[in-house]
Image 1 (cartoon, rainbow, N blue to C red):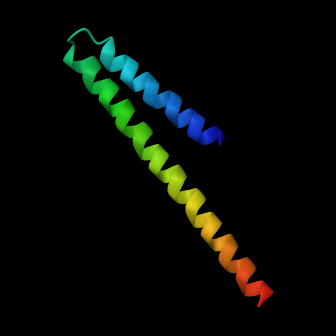
Image 2 (cartoon, rainbow, N blue to C red; image 1 turned 180 degrees about the vertical axis):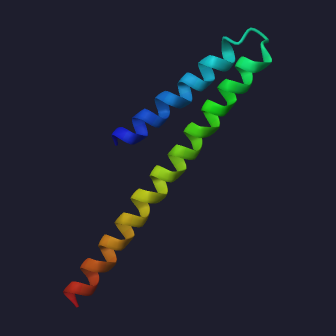
Image 3 (tube, rainbow, N blue to C red; image 1 turned 90 degrees about the vertical axis):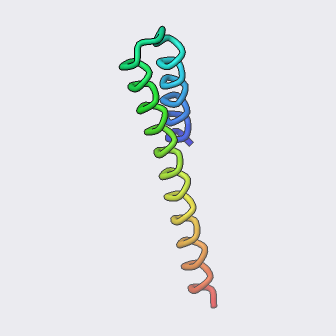
Length: 65
């Protein structure tokens, strides 16, 4: 849960960087990079938790049988 929160904070920070860039292309690029990295982080966190959950369910199912 904490990792989701951190990734969302980084996404908000990236959006804030874009909004406050004032037309400076370098600042917009930096904000987009931060935003893209936050989205990639969210995907990795989601996949990791899903994979671990899947493994635990399959191991418990195999042990019960």
